[in-house]
Length: 378
Image (cartoon, rainbow, N blue to C red; front, side, top):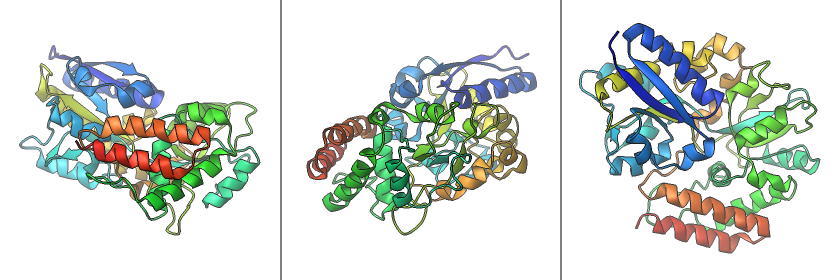
């Protein structure tokens, strides 16, 4: 045994926690390096200061929009270490959409994707013949009371991002300047407002997990969540009373399922770790194709490596989750990642929701959000 014991932090959901524990057990048997994992709620995961986590943990599962801020704080160790170029190139080539690139910042690699996600569509195959292919079809379903959408911040802003890009007017990722042209932003806002008039008001307080729990509950009549970060667990028989199916996002524009706001998570190493080399070794291993399509997926993880998304067994056990959403992932849009982005994301989400709740028109809401975006670069 090596006598090395590391600490890791991930997010509190079977998809986020179980595969880390299962893979770490295998790693301990292979190397003698033990890793103890803690977990935080989804809301904390999306907003808690990474610097504080880096001072307490050796390995951290992160969200890519944090990259600009946390690298400026100097709290992560770069993973583009000498002698591992071939391994790293293989990970880059196996990226699902922009997942690998999303952790590249200032010419360095700060994390490896271990979980690939974007807003996709969830639906109930026992209630619908097929997933809606257009946003107009979604609006019709919503009028029948059969649609939920997670709009708890920051997911409201993610829906705005996705629809903006899908309509052919993607939001800016660099600044300073406007996030989106006023006319384009107003068009997106009004489309969301139309949907919100036909779904329960509680959607403003629901995150994806809450929506999935309602959809998959026994007796539920909710048939569709049109824009929602996919959770493969709900496509596995026996996980919940009703199995959900997943599909590409419904198109609001004319180019199909393009522009979904990229999500997912990456494995990062703390710059304050007492044993950075051992932590880096684990990061390379858990992000590899062999692990991602094998023990990681088997433990309920949602791989960030193409080997997992292409694997027949992985797809067979998840109702085809990966193949059925792959086009959306490959055509996803990457959020801004600059130092001030996370504060902007929080504030803009709240402003968007306030406008939607009060029935405000899009002009003033978009003007405020544009001002917030420009200020985030100051």
